[in-house]
Image (cartoon, rainbow, N blue to C red; front, side, top):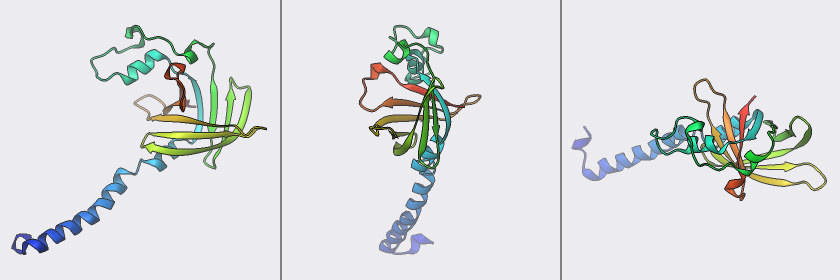
Length: 172
């Protein structure tokens, strides 16, 4: 039916269809975007130093590489990994407040804001409420749960040397 219309009318109708289709596609593609990342981070988390070998496995470019951490060779441990084992508790609340603790002792409260950069990445700013009102910015990479696993995310301080390492948080 459209083939019988003069060319200029056909193209005009085609452009209108694209104009109406584009917002729908953006809405569908963006459903798990910035708002999705923010809501995914809300909850109770426990973190530890990410092992360099597990990072290598996760970041390996193909399925043909090593399958276990024991198979990863020649990877130097990060500075965080060299520290005595520790746990960081992080309670991220929907109202913008955050509670943190180190090995269930030194606890701090503050606020958090997220600036999404991609659907599963962003800049997490945490302001600790103390005499100095310290503010730190972290790069966050959300790792959705795979079968049999819990949700996780990686946290590294913005501007830090990559050899320092990252914290791997898992939902409690």
